[in-house]
Image (cartoon, rainbow, N blue to C red):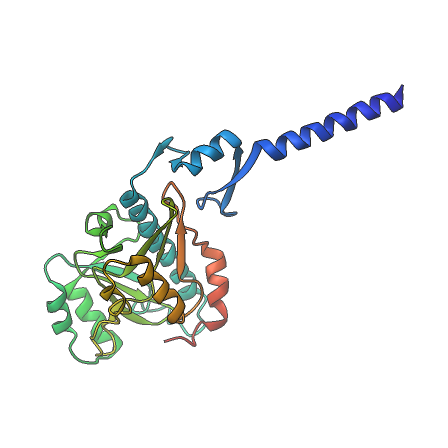
Length: 269
């Protein structure tokens, strides 16, 4: 009797395992530390159709990129703060080298370049920044009001001057209207990259680090633009191509990113 019961139990367990294997699937969910989520097959199929399961709807591509890149900036700021607090050379008595975001609606990009037309000491640049810009929280909803996604050129950036002080590179950077290059794979998978397509306003070298300049001569072949970039440009550090799930979450893990940068803290710049 015991053998029969054991056989029935094992057979049932095997059937259950097979059922779960075919019924449960993994989908990207970058709001979780694991970066994924186990769901039923029916939800998996909905995700494959483009649904954000949490909201039970398909978001517009523009909204997904907007959410993903703004979240990227928030997470990037969290990484920069960890770099700042773990830098043995940091001067914690002064906020001069503390990571911050700034923006200005009163100046255009050309005027900003003229303000920083020559190399200055960091504190002098900081004073100019604080006179010219307003500090803004990385979590402020206001950032989204002047962040623009252009699906025609597959780029994204800021319509107003937006400045970041990075603790890793220890410099101010001015974001442009095309600081991010976008890609959609198979009509669904969203990716973007940010590779310092900015203007470094702390060195006096104000020419835009426009890594995309040569790429956009292929206006009718955006895939070629992307491939030229990823094939021919070495990344400055770490991973620079980021993925966004259907709900607009980006696969930037703050802890893992910091671990990648930790050996280089104090050496970059």
